[in-house]
Image 1 (cartoon, rainbow, N blue to C red):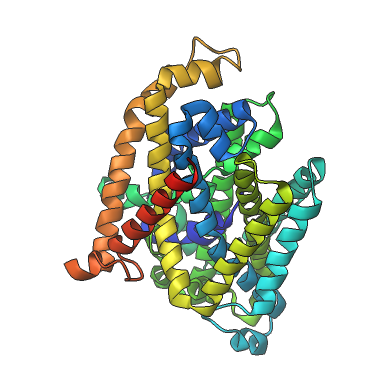
Image 2: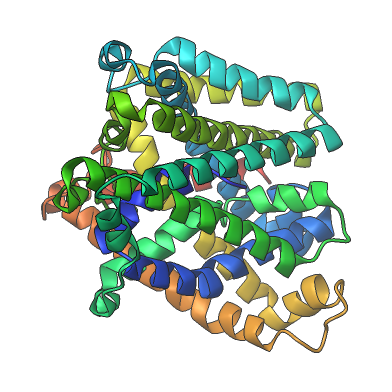
Length: 445
């Protein structure tokens, strides 16, 4: 799945860390994201269900709530994805027109734009089935990469763009000794690829039993990584061509908090960049569109796993998603809170998935769900080491990094850090996760 995270946060990470982030990203891809995607793909392929059914089938009934929590994390991020898609739709319309661009509300997209993006996604969920949906996804992915390649080649011809390319690709090896770059790489790689939140499980369910977990997971991870790198190699050179290399610092931000989306939008605001703005925002729009469809189908599939009839599942998914989007539109602070809570919820979801595999046994998981079905029972030594040793360490590291990031955002105030009503505190995350897990455990009995 090619989603918003690659195009929106990729440029931020390279602006913050430079080319060293590409090295850290590649390492995290191998020891973090790929194993998580393989876990989900193998479980979905074997169970032929969504995340709730796959968790039940592979790890047992007592673990069902973990699969439900993963789906809930994806749903919690839906509002932000639709709003980003609505914003991209408005920017496509306003490309090259300073009067239109200046008239847009920087805080939130218009209700009409949200309705267009959400309505189109729902239409696909209702109408497109099987092969039609797969073909539509391939067309969207091809269109995104075509738009990004054209934008990149166009941008690189600008005078001064070479400074942005040097900043994006130049590797300062000493940066790799800092914990922040590894936290951002782990966080960003999981978020960009939807690892740990059940999307790959649904992909495997629809794909069939003949596909290999390693190959499909690698293809997904590689495609998203290339898209993120292309996005950075568009935004950073364009910014450098416009305001010089010193202007790249305005794009920097962490994987957990980031910077305002309007900072990235303003890179394309010059009238001479109208074609670039049109193509890049079209790529963002298509990425948001694909992610919205995937999350809606994930939610519907999760309800179907609990034997809810499809029509009722569609109605429930429609009302819940509409409520979340409307609440975020009515209250920007609520939208920011949900983005914070459920983006860090990815850490919890990945940790729960890792814990489930460890409880099942990494060796047993390999034999029963990956090596056995693919005829490679004797292999998997690297998989066992990563799943049994490295992943638990990374989960702990990521958790500590999230605590540090939330403490920084709370300005070192214990009361704000632990407050359950603050927008971006640890307390609000823990409170909402605890309520969600308690409700899921009770409702799924």
